[in-house]
Amino acid sequence: MLDPIVTFFVRIFNAIGRGIGLFVAWLLWPFLAAHGWYMRRTWLVRGPIAIFLVALIGFYAYFIWQTQVWTNFNPNFIDNYNLAARKTPAGVELPAAAGETAKKCQSSAIVDVVADLTDANVNQNAWISSMLLYRLGFFGIDWDHTPFLDNKASFQRGVNQAVRRTAVELVDSLGRVRGTSGINNTLQDARGNIQFDEYSWYFGIDPFGPKTPTPSYYRAAVESFRAFNRELTNCGAIFDSRADNLLEFVDRISGDLGNTAAILRDRSENFNAGWFDTRADDRFWFAYGQLYGYYAILSAAQADFSQVIAERNLAPLWNDTVLQFRSALRIRPAIISNGQEDGWIMPTHLATMGFYILRARSSLVEVRSVLDR
Image 1: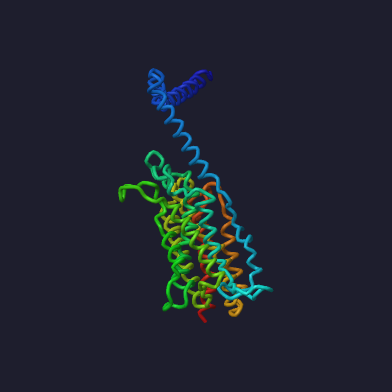
Image 2 (image 1 turned 30 degrees about the horizontal axis):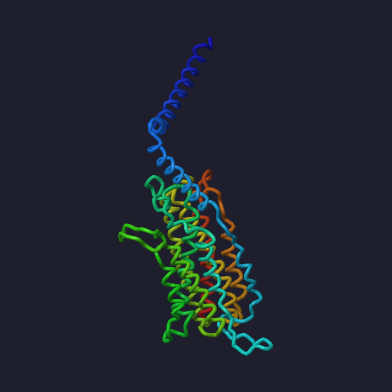
């Protein structure tokens, strides 16, 4: 009695098996055909092809390794600076030690941090965005439009955005006395180099010809940042740690975060594809890198502007602001999902990150209002 039913399901499963077999055969046919063609050639043909394939596999293995291994990634790296031990604002002359005759001034923790953030991006790690295989994409598809191997690149660009914003403020206000004094040339060099295109390799099409790759410019920026701090230590440069400069700096950071929050909101509202949104991870890790950079920079600013913060009784509010940034850095999901905000299957990591950014920005606005009194 059950034989027809059993026979029916057997036929269905056999058909499914044949379908899977045909699909696998179709998928492997080009490789089998290429293998057959390759084996019929002489070593004069097979040798160069084998060398090319080995080199290609090696390049991809190196590329995958560099995108998956995040060397010295540590949200708490700011603890290494022991900023609490700094009692003198940046640029202020230090008390002379016994037996010393030359003047010494306090270096800038902000400059130390931006130099080290950039050093981690291009010296301790490979700068992913300008690597050849990243530029070529995945079979012609931009890696940013795929769900894999692009998270580190987005994170690095987020960190670099924070460094770029800070470099502009260092040149325009922090590294000079008001608007009528001359711009520090060392900081100007650092700003020019750190603003360079993030995607340049050794050769380009637009314009056509050889180029200096992005990491070379960023390494030059690191050297310029550190050179400025050496000048500052020898009292040969200026760091103007006034309240209005800190207000302007906080205002610029707040605006930068507001722009990122808008990008997250746009992606979250208009592209609810859950785990299948291939651009959600780019947006998330860019925002994460930006917060990673600003967390360290604002922690350093508390040391550089210690006198202003003490005079305005800003320490509790500033500490709370920094903690808002640190809280956001605890969010590190294995797979980024851009689901509905009221969904119950796929989470909405972009909305969560946007919430933390807006909360941190709100704290910065409060800091600004205190400074503006």
